[in-house]
Length: 224
Image (cartoon, rainbow, N blue to C red; front, side, top):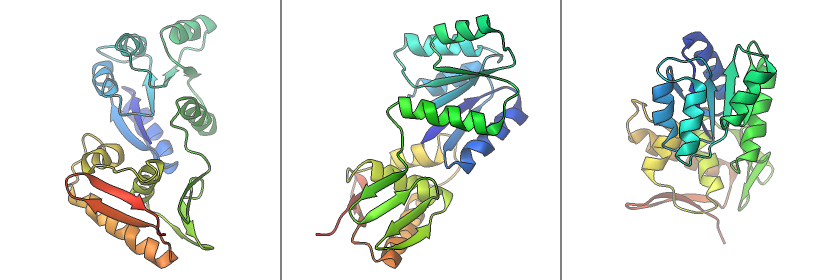
């Protein structure tokens, strides 16, 4: 799942990015409210984490603008303000949750998980397809009693394919959801990671295959 983090304190933004990536989220970082709004309007995120005090547009203005445009992506507001009235203003602006700084990483990640459950993009503890099990807590792919741990991008790619339940996923969508808007990576990284996943499926003895459809993308197919 892709998360947008907007905070003009770069050290804080990068710390949030590191926490989220350790939990296998893909992250886009921006450092002002104008970019947060532009990115948020794409609706390509499972969650947006917005600092309230940002240049150009503050977090409250971003939330209001997103909701006026019909964007329903869950929003977690972060701020040094801890007064109840400030929280009420943030929630009334359209935010889904509010977390005061400083906070402990465990609480931040728990809020993230709670919001993604509400959004309809919640990933259960295990994803199933054919004879495959993807464990979202250990990042292991399992089949027939054997397991293999996936790398970060491999995991995100397999999660995307499994959540599509055999539907076709375009290369463009994979690049967007796994590598992000501003990635310098070439499209060839998709093929490399698909190849790695195919080898791991073979090593597990799984009947599931990743197939390619010219001009459409990739999909999972379960054996008979």
